[in-house]
Image (cartoon, rainbow, N blue to C red; front, side, top):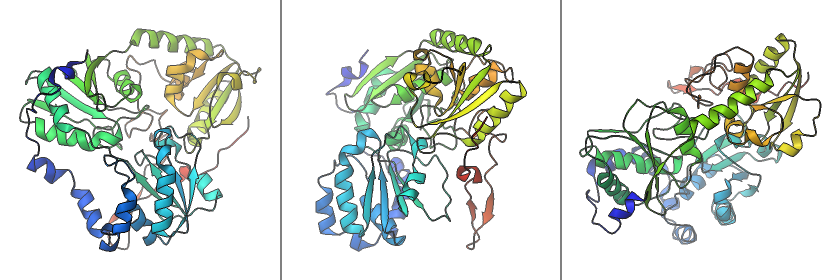
Length: 429
């Protein structure tokens, strides 16, 4: 129930600022701001143009202009999730004018960072992509022709109210785990700094390579038993990922920064397990499998497709590989000869909507269970992009090479994107 409403209008129980929090939060950003020339940061015309954008949304316009000018970019692709498309034309006009570049707005649906569409941007003749609203999930070759900039679009929220809500709702000895979507991770860090003197245990969990506190719809950190989870977001999709990964945690709460309400959330694990085990059981009798490579940006990993294809063929199963940008029941029903499907796009598509398909639609993990390669786990793995994920995940050694490091000319070690990100999928049965 809306516990935060009890503290609505109350004076905050925490100070409005924290020196520790202020010292830790902007370090990286301060270094970036110091590099941006004053003629960009202090441009009165640019400041005036930016006033039309919402003040609590950080679109990092000066940084973007500086990066584009530094790269001597000519044509820039701008990619947005649905919720930010309303600002696309404004940002396009500002960037075109002040960076002196041509901009292309990529209007295809973007569900997450896995949908970054560098391939289409290259085909359009772009030399730079600015991807808004998601973290740097998909590696892109730093030495390649196409440059990338991820703008998280951090959203400023009333951290005082968040802190007051938690203090009013939980006892000081409660173990509190703070998490949320990428837009609110800065607020999570600030809240943790301010509340660590009140709560005996205050943590911001991390599933590498994600940022501390960040949760994806397919990837979430593993938490210890006990305590409560407070998830900062306006919806349940990402929270459900954390819930699926941590059934041992009894109490999950969602803090909506817009309505400023704290509500307890629940997940029906038994119903989900029943549906997924039923689909796996049905798929075990299939003779022909369709392997779907998600082609929405970088959503599908060809290496996972290749691995699954070999596994099915070793079991004398017929295999057909299909590329789809979006997966709908009506589309799959056109393939009458396929008995069961495995989609390498988003695990949540199988978990949340698998029941809507007439034939089993498995995730890579479920496919391995169906083949007897792994046993069904009592905790459904939400580790699709986790460094510690299973063999069905993107970063497992059996799927992709470990990121190599090499010495740059400066003497620093630099991460090099895995080559599999640039391999074309092998299509055929």
